[in-house]
Length: 135
Image (tube, rainbow, N blue to C red):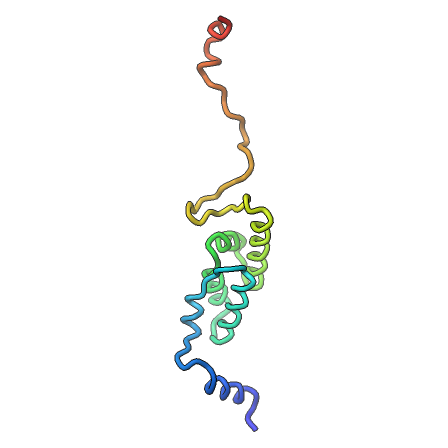
């Protein structure tokens, strides 16, 4: 009777894809839907490669949608678990309040939904000559 490890390897050799390259698949993986779906896909692929945690984190972050990725990177997560948690929170926030999306993919700039701190200054033509105003 083979060991569990040997048995699972025999099954993989027999039924797995012939030209599978999990590292290439991991490098191509991009988030297209919800972050939870991306995380599931990422986990399924990353379990097939031997990769240091820091490189796994880099691949995970690189696969996220750009706005999600930028928000998560701001907090400098040190594990995939933290990055995933931050991504879920951000995704939940933009789903609940879509008008408050901070990072625009096309403009690559920060947009704020709050009003300006200072009021618009008065028109100088209206305030420069008070006699002209009275006539």
